[in-house]
Amino acid sequence: MRDRASRELRRPLTGFALAVCGLASALTGVSALSQTSAVDEIAKYRAALQEGNPSELWEARGEDIWKQKRGPKQASLEACDLGLGAGVVKGAYTVLPRYFADSKRVMDLETRLVYCMVNLQGLNEADVVKTPFGNGNDKKSDIEALVAYVTSESRGIKMNVSLDKPEERDMYRLGERMFYFRGGSHDFGCVTCHGADNLRIRLQDLPNLTTLQGAQKAYTTWPAYRVSQGELRSFQWRLYDCFRQQRFPELKYGSEASIALTMFLARNANGAAYDGPAIKR
Amino acid sequence: MTHRGRSLMQALTRVAPWLSALALTMGAIGCATAPGDAEISARAAQVLKSSFKERGQAKLDRLDQDDTQRLCTEYAGKPLPQSVIDKIQEENKSTLRYPADGKLLGDWKNGEKIAQEGRGMQFSDDPAGPVGANCYACHQLTPQEVSYGTIGPSLYRFAKIRGYGAEMQKYAYGKIFNAEAFAACSNMPRFGHKGILSEQQIKDVTALLMDPQSPVNQ
Amino acid sequence: MADPMKIRANLVGDSTEVKVLMSHEMETGQRKDAQGKTIPAWFIQNVAATCNGKTVMSAQWGPAVSKNPFLSFKFKGGAKGDKVVITWTDNRGDKRTDEASIA
Image 1: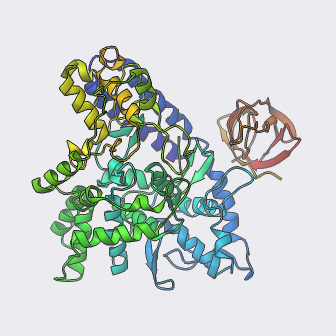
Image 2 (image 1 turned 180 degrees about the horizontal axis):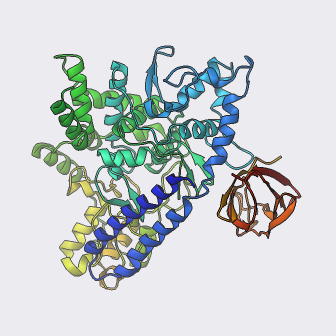
C-alpha cells in the first residue's frame, strides 16, 4: 500500500538490532535474555504501529484549515509564503527555518504559520497561540493540524536548509551554543542526553544530535503522532517537553531560542529525506 | 564548491556540524573573524533567558549559570584544558558535606525507591510531591530492573567489585552529593550541592550501592 | 459531529482490503483526572461496513480499543468503483458515517 510503511518497518529493527548487540557485551552476569527481549518487544510494537498512523487525521484537518477563508480579512492561508513562494506547500518544510524579508527575521514553520494567520487573515496573535498543543477532543490545536498537513507535503524530499543569509548563520551558531547550555537544578543541557552515540534513557534510545546520522534520523521524524499522548506533536512541542524534563522553566512558544535550536537541528539533518509525520510511542 | 571542498564539507559535517557551518561562514564572508566562544556563549545565555517564562516551581533563576555550568558550556564540544578541569573539581570539592553523625549508609530499600522515582523539580511536578534521583534513567543498578539507561556506567555489583570499606562509602556518598568534585562537567546532577536530595535520601542511595544486603551487590 | 474517518479500499485479487482510521477519544471510563474524578467512558460500541448496501463486516467494540482506532479487514468480492460505507456508533449515541470507492 504505502511503501513508506515497509521502509519504516526495516529501520527501527536495524536500530534495535544494533542496540541488542551493544547490550549483550555490556551485561555482566545479569539476565541478558530478559534485557534483550524487552528491547526486541518494543521494536516489534513499533513495527506494528507503522500502519494506520492517526497523524493522517490531523493532516486532513490541517488541509481543510489551510484552504478555509478565516479571520476578519476572510482570507485563506493559500497565499502564505512558507519559503518557496506564496501558496507553495510541497517541499516547504525542508527549507525551514529560513530568513524572511517581510518579517525581517528567521522563522520556523510554526512561527511562520502564526505570522500568516495574523497578517493574511487578521487573526489575533494571542488567540492563535493560545492552544499550541492540543489536549483531547475539546482542546484541539489548529496549528498542530496545519503542521501535520504542511509537513506531510514534504515527505520523501531531502532536507535542504540554507545558511546563505547572515541572520541564518547567526541563528545556527546561537542554536549550537544553546544545545550545549548546561543549566537548571540538574545541570542538564541538550548535550547531556544527545551528545554521544548509543545512549538510551531507561529503554528509550537517544539520537546523537551532534552527528549527521543522528540529527537526520531525529529531525526527519518530527512532527509525529505520539501514542502515549494520543496527539500529533510538533517540533516546538518536542523542545518544550525536553526543557520541562531538564527542570528548566517553560519554553515560550515560537521564542528565539526555539527557532535557534530548530535551525541548528534542521540544518544538521540536511541531505536526509524528510519522513514525517511519523508515529512514536 | 570543488569536489574536494564538498568532500571536506561532508567530513566536517559528520564530525562537527558547527565546524562546517563556520567554514561556510568564513568562506562566504572572506577573511572575517568568527565571534569568540565566550561571546557566543554569553549571547546564547541571554537569548535563552528571554525565551523562557516561569512556571510552577521552575523560576527564571534556574537559567542563571554558576561557574561550573558556564565553563562546561563554554568548553562544550572541545577537550577541557587541565587547568579548567582542576578549577571545576576544586570548586565542587569545596561544597562536599558529609553527615555529622558519621553514618553514611541509610536504608537501601528506600534508596531503590529514590532510584526509581523520576519526578521532582519539573514545572509539572507538585512541589510538595516526591523528589527522586531517577538513577535508572542513566544507570543499571539491581539485576531485577531491566528498564535502565546507558547514559552513565553500570553500577551493578558496585561495592562487590570495589569493596565495602569506609573510604569507598565516602567516595560513593561524595559522588552522589556532587559528582563534579570528581569529574568536571560530568553529566550527573549534583544531588546534594543543588539541594535535589536530602541528606537522608543520599544516605539511602549510598546504601543501595554499598550495603552488602542490597540487591545491587548480589 | 465527529471528525471524518479516513477510508481506503483496494481490490487485491478476488478480495477487497479496507483500512479505516477513525477519530475518537475511546475513553475507557477507568481513568481519573487530576482532581481524582473518574473520566466518564466514551467509546465506539458498534462498527458496520457495507458494500453496495450489503453488510460485509460488523463489530462490537469495548473500552479495550485504543484512541484513534485503526481498523483493517478484508471481504470477498467487491469491484472497482463500488462504494464501501463505514458507520460507527458510540455509547453516547454519537454516530459517524463515511464512504470510499474501491480502487
